[in-house]
Length: 90
Image (tube, rainbow, N blue to C red):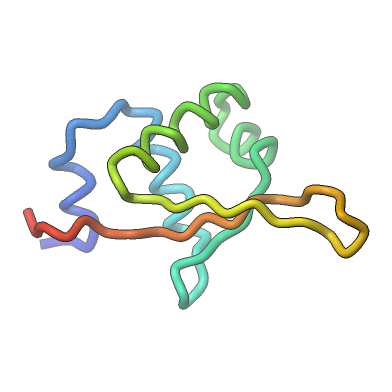
């Protein structure tokens, strides 16, 4: 079985699966990644709003936890995305 079989078995829109694969490919050893929405959209040839919907889909099923991040001056920077795996094995 592959590492991501749980993803392939889930009833998710294709946009969510694609964005999860993108985030998975860019995660560090702690399963955290922080690409910007524009970067994800550009590299996957999706609209920014489609990426936002995909991340919401992933949050709803518990595959991603999003955390806002800020610069020292208080301005927003790229969110941190924590990649999770479902409790139940498929």
